[in-house]
Amino acid sequence: MYSKVKLDVNFPELEHRILALWNTTKAFEALRVLNKNAERWCFIDGPLTANNPMGVHHAWGRTYKDLFQRFYSMKGFNLRFQNGFDCQGLWIEVEVEKELGFKSKRDIEAFGISEFVKRCKQRALKFSSVQTQQSIRLGYWMDWDNPSRIEDLADKLNYPETIIEYTGTTGEKATGTAEQIVGKLGSRTLGGSYYTLSDENNYSIWAFLQKCHERGWIYKGTDIMPWCPRCSTALSEHEIATEGYKEIVHSALTVKFRIEGRPNEALLVWTTTPWTLTSNVAVAVNPEITYVKIRRQDEILYLAKAALPKLPGSAETLKELTGAELVGLKYNGPFDELEAVEKSGTVRTHRVIPWNDVSEVEGTGLVHIAPGAGKEDFELGKIHGLPTLAPINEYGIFVEGYGEFTGVHVYDSAERVIKALEKKGLIFKVEQYSHRYPVCWRCGSELVFRLVDEWFISMGAKLEKNLEELTADEKRDNLRYQ
Image 1 (cartoon, helix red, strand yellow):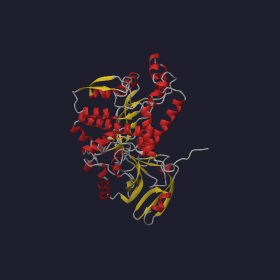
Image 2 (cartoon, one colour):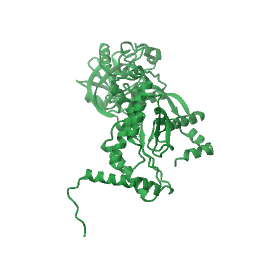
Image 3 (tube, one colour):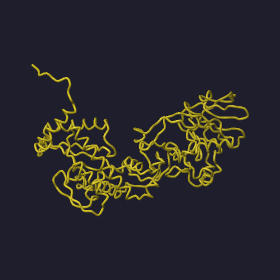
């Protein structure tokens, strides 16, 4: 009833045989001709970053994409079958920096930005060729460019004045410099894969930004951003949430903040980022948490009641009180002598503020607030009208006005901060604390939170109102790819 099936199937040989059959019969080309005038089914390929050879996880994704497109083709729909390559971003730049032995963005500037950009384009083209060959071997049906021609284009970028001719998958020819040809890849005229480094993609982005500017949606503001000192750039919250955490051990400090006008009384404040203490502005407590006033040796200290068991040695509890009773208490900051702190007016604003998110599970229940070095701190600063100190530059180095810390990299600052606080008698406890901490997914460097100037696109009610005012031509342009 059934034919016997061989138990020793040679899968690679079988795959090569099927690929040869498709190639000989021009099966893919025949399918496209068959469905040419049929109803369109839109499938836009999410581009794979052309930065390295494909991994197994890429092959899985491409297999699913191929399955969907074959299914709708078999139902008689006309598909564009256009693959995409993501050719922009720091992921590619970091790999080129590694190839050139660079350590920071300043090395790129010394090397020459134009030459560096060319190297990035060449890397993207090289690995788009590699990934194309891998995808063809996978059996993925797409309107593929000739891999060898793409590699040739990458080489030709070394000769910017040379005029060359390039034939696209449509059979159309384009003439110009290699740079000009690369800018046309994936166009309707040439066909083949779309590249995010193409002129069409880049000018579309600028056209979009122009429209936003004309409608008054673009504005410049400040915000606290996750920042990679090595890459000298910000990261989005999405990048951190999906790929950006590692278990890291840091020095966690419990520091005494002296209460103003009360000799020998201090708030016990906890932090895992010692460098931010140089820019302390306030201390936050949870109004609902129970705190205690204790006597320990010759000092009177304040902390959350739940944190008492963590204290070394013994202490006498003098009073229990709520966090709300601590709000408004003024104190002296740990680094009020620094020029930047004095000039900012921070010295006159040190006080305890309420924050319902303060936890008694970790630390002491009193959180040090530095609006220029923390996302939540920045928001609290806006609510309470606090000054904002921005202690580090784009390379993670302390700027002028921070005394002995000026010129020191943030990664090298913890021990200096600890020693400075020990001299002042403000260190209560230092512990090695293991926790999940955000890192740069591109280079693995630890992130910091930094105050930066950023350009924003306004959203919300104003955006909805302006969308209603789009002209008929603009609406048609927005729908032309659907």
